[in-house]
Length: 307
Image (cartoon, rainbow, N blue to C red; front, side, top):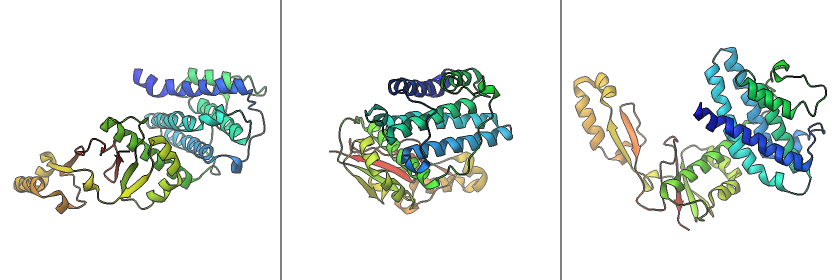
């Protein structure tokens, strides 16, 4: 319960509180005409796409009675809305100009909160009801008196954009790696660094990251992003045999296989991966470089260079 409170309920309520503070200051009217899709910022579009995909995923899991899987989708969504959308949109809420950028931010966050209230109704009936009564009833005279009487949200195929969502997810992935590298190296974000070096063997990642390069530079407080191909320059691998895996497979030869795993140089193995081995990544020798950032697959590495 405590973990759910810290990881989901409090972040969700913080998003609601943030919205209400600035909506009251700016007298935001949720009944105002919504901006068309083409006038929304890319960040707004991605947020609405993720909200729409959340609706699809939760509905599908509920129809299959996979309630635990449905509940898990909410945590990831709220983490994005709280730690990325709201944080990256704060300047639009703070600005004095009441332009399309500010209105789009308000309308998008309002749509997120009201839709979440309806999606969460079967899972968190009292919190969802409270959100609905505070966000919907005061502004819509025709609204039903309870969130539990409303129609459950439906997936809209028109609200889509896999490329937009993928590029944003990769940017967040890089930022997460960079923050993990800073934490491991003991270098705080406030200290500027000359570069962040990325190692990735997925071809479509580079153009996706390039779309959000400035965002990544700002988030990590670095001056440049570089790409590298040879991860052994930054990280070392140690392979250890897992006998419960290789024993049944190789029988009496398991000891010989284990010896080969332990003695064969890393470079000779290339990209070899097997259930017979576990990979552990050691720290880089330099204080300013850290590798194996976060719980990411071996295809991704991030290092930071000293300013």
